[in-house]
Length: 242
Image (cartoon, rainbow, N blue to C red; front, side, top):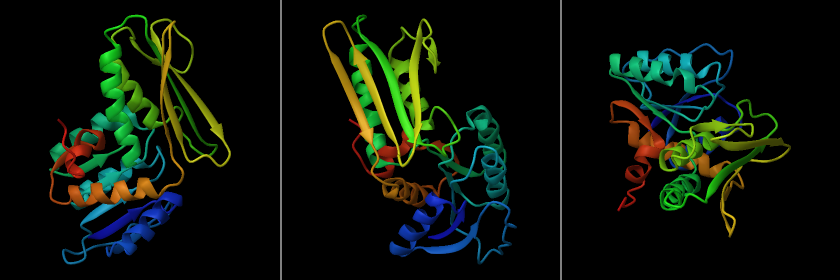
């Protein structure tokens, strides 16, 4: 693949290193404040991989769609504008794939959450709580991964009317921490008067995120539409969904 990297922070550099290691070509790198490169039909990248900030992601995605470059984004914190990009993508016959987290482990964790939450929803005595910890420079709070986990629980456990960062009646509580030198830890705790079940994912480094993003980019190259990684994860990695 010829890859355009958008955002040259820790994730952008990790994607670049892993892409080169896998034999892919870096067509160009665009960081904050850079001018976008000009491509002709022979140099147009096969795909773009975008890890930036919530205030710039929408413009980046629109630009890629306008240029006809499929784009994979792992930027979170722009949920209120996803419908806009989905509509724009459809209008322009573009290709966008979004993930709150590209880690293989996290997406396995999502699959487990769906099963456990669906089973425990039959028992009124169980309540749930999400807790996440990230590095102090992470802008959005709670994390996109925690929000995806909350959406899974809310779809299965009808006792909750939504999620909140505060203790509110009928709301699923998300506790968010920001600490030094933490790549990302997420846990969901199911509690009853009799017992407690906790499902935890802890990221040791960013390599899993980069690997998942590259696999998603390879999958997206010949697709059209707006996709959520969690919805196509099993297909991307040829995992039986039965």
